[in-house]
Image (cartoon, rainbow, N blue to C red; front, side, top):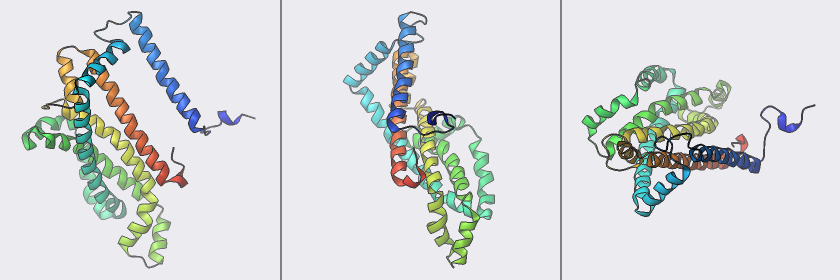
Length: 263
């Protein structure tokens, strides 16, 4: 008989989860240090952890790092919220109505397969090079994915639950608000968490062109001078910020959906 820890999808404690996670990052850090210390890769291509940390410390002391983080977080927040509000306003109705879905889903599918990067020069022509252009790129890269995933989450609510509401004499908007949306909300929330990571990717894409600040902009500037320590440092910071935001969303999910046992 197999022990409990070897079972498929066997649960582990929160402490075990954290220990394993920290162990993964520790091993990666040690491998990075060993490779650079042994000189296996030229520092131009892979600077040492010490060089990367040193570059971040310098930029943190002169305020550049904090300014870039603040600007990028501001842009991601506005762009992501715009996409989320619109997706939450449209997605549930697409999931409930076959006619609305037939009218909008093919259009959204058509647009979402267009590479967002190709819209960067057009967005500059349409809205300029200010923050509005950054919001537009984040919105475009996030909204169409969000609305289709929310539509799918609503559409997968069992039809029997909807029939129950109709049997009780509930109107269409009551069924949506009191039955469909609460049943689909855990999956919808998970969609919002996943697409937040995509929004971070599009933020960097938006800041790589026609920007005067932000983390993507700083990476572009560092690239011109082959400052790989700064590039990797900012990539690490981006990863940490994304991890923090993701963990915050997971914590909110655990509080909201205790019955779903969200990790």
